[in-house]
Image (cartoon, rainbow, N blue to C red):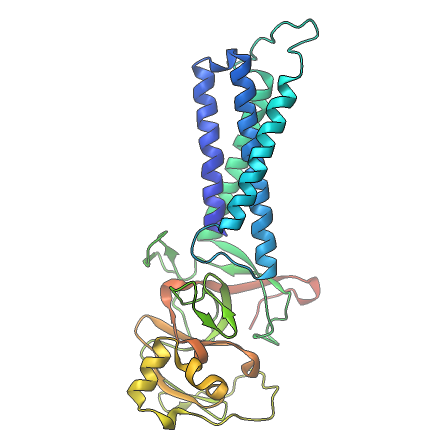
Length: 339
């Protein structure tokens, strides 16, 4: 979402830049040009408003953007709104007299008519707010809503929380590199990450997950050998011990499938996110052993019997981990830091 806000801010900023430029050049002394440019402002506001609305509705319904920053549907709706906004603003102003006596209205201070000055004020406000929000969301704190029950009872569906995004370092935009790390990812950390897939058409756990944010608990660190035996986790051959946060709702334990293929093949299918497609639910309680690749982490939901996690679709690269769950702020009855 922060990248979407950033580019929306750039769009408004471009309008603001050209408005100042045209004002300095005296372009707004022409009533026709003033009408056209004000209509452009209204069109941009309509475009931004509908774009944000469709993004919000798509996120709520689970229909996330996959192959592009904005989906084709979102852009088409926004363009239609922009065209309608431009036509409405242009013909509405054009049909009004310049003044009561029909004489042109002189430019306001700074060389621009009052309507353009007002447009500039709105553009400055929106540009500053949107860019600031995108920077804060990208670098420092992001709001996140729990979408499913995979983390019960640590989180409940509908919980709203803040994610600490600077704790693991700042990711350089459009790269896999992070800088200025303030802490290392550790076992037991609850992390928010982008689903580890580069193919928008890939299906996992009953649907397309590309582009979605997940929240899970870190179980396996880079280089560790992870195995599940009847639901019990073993790290490098040793029982991980008591997990007070873990919940098991199903009294049944599924048998494993790792005895049906060589370890190297099992490892390869797991790393390429194809294991669950072959053995389905058989990895839930008896899984591995696998070795977590360098620079990757194995994550699992606290609701172990109802979680789509690394058992099914592999490890999570570090660069996709956005931050650590920090503080539940809604509902008030559950306010506090997760454990």
